[in-house]
Length: 169
Image (cartoon, rainbow, N blue to C red):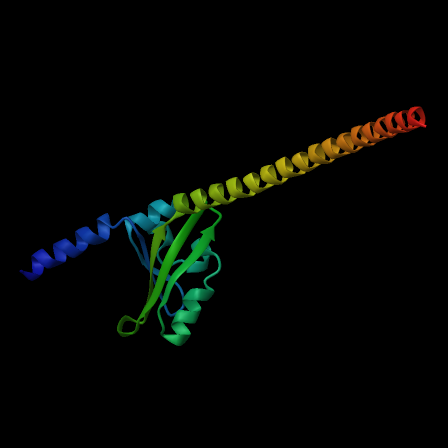
C-alpha cells in the first residue's frame, strides 16, 4: 500500500474513531485530541490544545502514574461530572514522542443500566422483606386465633366431659 494511502486511512481512522483519544506531553499539556474526544467533553479542539489536561479531565493522577512508571493502565473506569460521562480508559506512554496517550470508551449507557439494575435489585429486596414481614404477622395472628379457639374448645370439651362424668356417678 502506498504511504499516501496509508496516511489517508490513518487520518480517517483518527477522524471516525468513536472513542475519545487524547495525548498530553510531559507537562500534562494537551497536544492532541480527536473529534470524538471533543464531542464527549463538549469542547472545541482549538480551545483546548495547549491547555493543562486537568482543566478538562480534573484529576489526572493516572496520567502522572503512567508517566512516572512508563507502564500501561488498562480498563480504569472514571466518572466525569461535566458533562456527565462514565468512561473506560486505557492510558499508555509513547516514550519516543515523550507523550502519554489515552483511549476513552464511553460506557455511560452501560453504567446507567447497571445503576438501574442495582436500584431494581435493592427495591425488590425491600419488597420481598416487606411481604415476608406481612406474612409473618398474618401467620402470628392466625396462630393466636387458633390458640384462642383451641383453648375455648378445650374448656368446652372439659365442661362436657365433667358433666358426663357427673351424670355417670
